[in-house]
Length: 138
Image 1: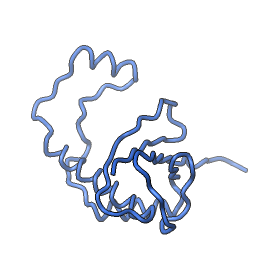
Image 2: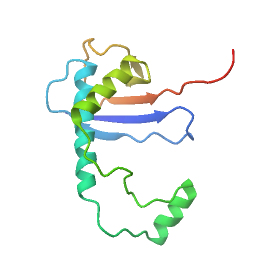
Image 3: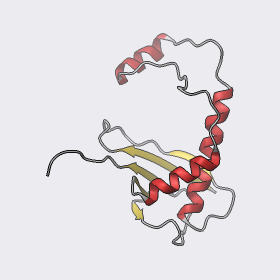
Image 4: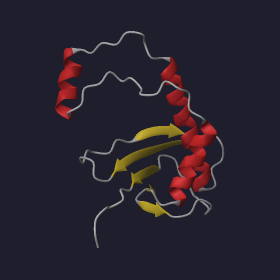
């Protein structure tokens, strides 16, 4: 089944959210199941990309102009070449959800429980919003 996800970090420059497709293979009955599948896919993609990094990096003039407009020029390199653990990533995302560090919306409806039954339809959009803690005096 094909689904989409998009992410937003509060406080970052408001850019249009990009829908990123992903497929689920196993039955998904809860938000916990969905998060586990999504995190597993993303960690595998991250680890595969670390292996596919070319030895020499270059940037074209067009890429340089595009990057300059966004205010950041980089070569796509990773800060840490180490392989990431799927189990650790799943544990981290579940704990972050329980600690209310991010929100999950399914087609603009907030999901509040990891274990509540979840009805998923083809082409549903899941939005992840990372929350930012406020600092200051009361």
